[in-house]
Every structure is written in structure tokens, then in C-alpha cells.
Length: 309
Image 1 (cartoon, rainbow, N blue to C red):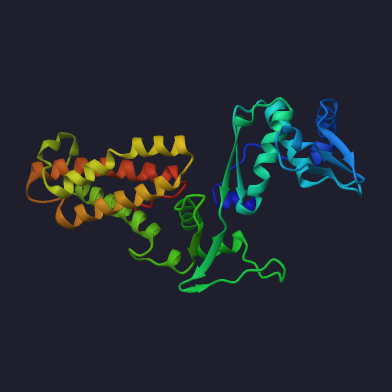
Image 2 (cartoon, rainbow, N blue to C red):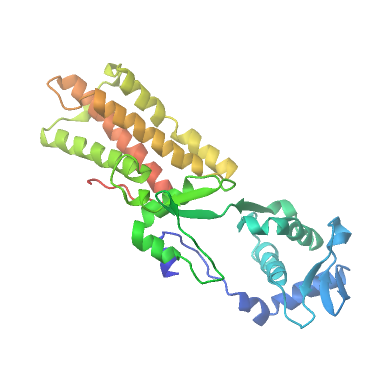
């Protein structure tokens, strides 16, 4: 829980697997499947009759030694989620090594008279850790692992979150620990957050010089870099809608990079605080809006928006 809290991943409810057995939920759901004819006993084990629902083979629920399988717990948990707690939709994120389990989970929901469409399963590819060009070798068998806590200690929550968000679930991800610590434009986290900090610095300078943006006339913004930044800012609602519909947050991470690039190009070409009072007010108004959009984008990714770096 402490590690997830540091990563800014919050759960409304922590669920004990053992509670499914202690509460009788497991026995109840197996009883339902048995009464519907979907439980078989053969070879000393208890099986879910997946073949009756179009699957290529039946699946073991209780082993011959009497111990429940992981599938048995999954059945009870999903029944509790959809039938007891009445979730409209459940989104599971499974590793690529569990892809073969998707159809049987959908089949058991159908057997329990729960619409399988209420369960959406996202298959996520595994992550490769690197230090520059060198791959970090990991092995569960030999005990050579790097924990999430160690990654957080090394690169921080912002870099961790962005790297996991920046690739689609079905894409192989290379997490370069050295790159994640760099304070340069090579590091996308630094590049994006530095854009926000630089905008804040511009706004602070304008305030020191008592420039009031409220009278700014945005029709004066006609330079290509100004217009390009505006166009990119206006895309945020569209990107949010895309993420919500597709359940693919990597679009937001990509957008953050695009927006930061547009700002850095603007910063290079256009001076905000200048001798031209009216242009300064118009560009300051643009900066206020850009800060809001970039901060909102970072917030949606669960990342901080530093005001100085």
C-alpha cells in the first residue's frame, strides 16, 4: 500500500482474497455453477465445464489435492464484483502471459448469467528495464529482481507514471532508468515539466512588472508559433474524450509532449514581456491559458506541475 501511495495509485477498497472463503462467497458461487450444470468432477478434481459454452477445453477449479486454483478465486471475486456490488463495468489489466485466460473468464460470467460485455480486459505487455544501451537482467528463478519501490527511489513517481503511461498496453515498453533521471530535453518528463515551470516564470516576471493580462487582445496573436500553440491547446478536450472511449491513456502522454514542444517553439520565437504593451498583454493571456492546459494535462496523468526547476 505504501508503494502504491507513493506512485499516487489509490484504491477505494482493499479486498482480501481470504474473505471470499471466510464469507462463504466462494462456496455460494460454486454452488450456483453446480446447480446450473457447469461443474464437473473428473480425475479427482473439480472442473468448470467451459466446453459447454464453446471453449476448447474445461478448466480446473479445485485440484485433486483439494486446493482451489487461481481461476476459482477469480470466479468468486468477479461474481462478488458484478452480482453483489453491482459494478456496471469492470476493467482488468492482465499481463500478456494471461491472455489465454480471457475467454474462460468471459465464459464463466455467461454461466453465472452476467453479461460478459461488462468485463473489459486489457492485456499489457511486459516491461524491459534498461540503463542506457544495457538491459537490466531480471530473473524470478534466481531472485534477481528490481521492485517498484526501488524504481521509485531511483527515478521518482513522476518519471515512473509517465513511462508507464507513454506506451499503449499492447506495445513492448523499454524503461530507461538513466534517461528518466536526466535533466535535459532528452527526458520527456523533464521536457514537459520544464515547459510548465518556464511558463510560470514568464507569468511571475509579468506580474513583477505589473502587466495585467485581462486587457489582452488575442487577435494580436498572429505569429506562426503563437497560432500553433493555440491550436495544440485546443486539442485537450478531444484527447481526453479519445482516452475515455479507447481506455488508452498513452494518447495523453503523447499530447503532453506535443504541447510542450509547441510552447518551447513559441518561447524561442516570441518574447512575452516586451516594450509593446498591447502585444505583451495578449501573449501573457496566452501564457495564462497555456499554464492551465499544461497543468491540467499533468494532473490528469497524476504528475506534478512544478512552478520552478
